[in-house]
Length: 550
Image 1 (cartoon, rainbow, N blue to C red):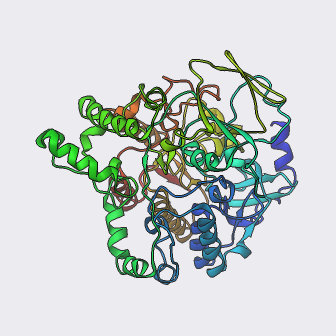
Image 2: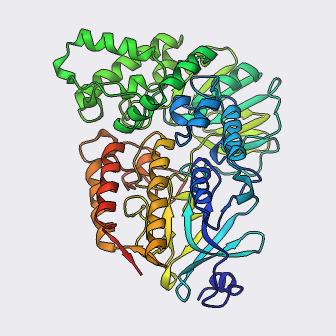
Image 3: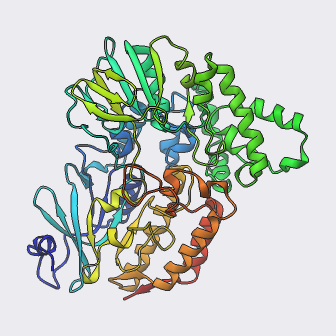
């Protein structure tokens, strides 16, 4: 037994005593809020442990300028309460972070969920006690909590990563990952600002910082494709009309692969003339949200020639928006095609580089050598900055779980099992780690997040009810079922251009050991939401095939 394990187990109650809770939910974000709502309705002794001082998850942290949905607001909110749908007014097609956080607070207060939440309660360790079939949780405040079941809702993008650059601790001014943007307003009006990275977050924040900063220097290693968000306000009359369509909206989300209102064009790429394709793309490029990505021909995700034609179209649109042709070419990806990985949405991103106070530095041509007390050095120049923002990605999908020392029977650690990438059963369980379910974890359906998490919670809750009804104290996924699911997940990557992308979807992150390009981590299920829902139904109807109970 390790010293850490002994510390967690030492204060546990005697064998046979009831655990502190029947269910502990880890995380008070979108998933954790809905799960505790379902448990509260059942009268289950349950609590949420949230590491932050308040609820919200990703919407608690990401307060950078420009942070907002890329899902249509009315497809992102919860669908479980008609009363809630009738009361809440989304003010924009794509809600900004402050409004989204207000929405989550409104939901929690409306349904009386706050009393079931504990804040500043970071779980550092989880050890499964085989004598009592319970999890023993060690918190960073020294407390120990026991529970029969754990529902992990730790977030897909909750563990930010900083770049491995010499001298990163030496900078004397404000420096932070965009995930940790200061909660108190930061005045950039007379500041020389550096943004390192051009991923989805940077694509949102760069246009906003450019409007305020004295100078903004963007350090780009790999350009990303991006398309206009085309956001707009939602009037009272428009919101009233949306409320009449909610049943239709959620029904559409349930039948589309990505869980959005955007349905793919199934006419066939090669059955449509090049002129018709161009006309379609002109319409979709100017439409709101993911239209250009998800209302497109399905061949763009699988056929290299089809994707190349679309990529050249998008490249031409970028060239039209950026005045300097040299800068425009630097902003056009050459190592992957448009839409083969999750598409960042932008508002004025490309136009930001037309501003006199914005400079783009190609970090492949002149790499960053070190951070200095007053700025940074590349192989070519020395820069002076007042603020450095690291928009350098996340330890996606598995980072939030790996951050907790999770030990199953026999002391096996989850982070060791997942060293080469996640292995799960249906994205909900992990063989060898009993009484643990994951909400929004790796290898679940890659969909509009709330639509996927409601599917998960609406499966987990009756699953637990099934256990209580039958008097079971322990479940575990069968290794054979887990292996079969993993092979199916891998199979769903075949045929997709995504499989070769340098993307967080495939586990690539140069800031993490073991996340190198070519070592694919099968983080998502690419079979689409409807197929995933069908597989869950079939498994349930077959008496939860692949799960052992006792």
